[in-house]
Length: 159
Ligand SMILES: [Zn+2]
Image (cartoon, rainbow, N blue to C red):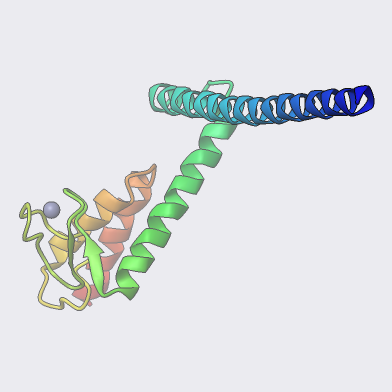
């Protein structure tokens, strides 16, 4: 009978070992999930830090990160263009002022009253207004190049 007692004992201890192993495994799994969650949190904080830094220093030309700023600005511009393209394909346009979606070709935003940037298909729009729109959209360093172009346009119409 002693043999069976011993056998029983060893089986029980093997069972205990198994539960211990299972506990460890589940503990490891839980810890790994916690680590992943914390890593995601840190990544989010890094991203937030970078966004704040970008917003604060993006206009500094002599900045060490100028090239990275340029790449970010370029990518953001591409996103804007692609989003506008999606809207255009959907037959809509985004108000430059409040961001509301208007039907393509609408002259004014029905939400805030702002002029829509691209009055597509509107031939009745006065030319002076079109010149203003160009000024707003090309808000880079093209101010010198814009004025002679207007003058040559005038000379052309006089003849
Ligand atoms: Zn609007």
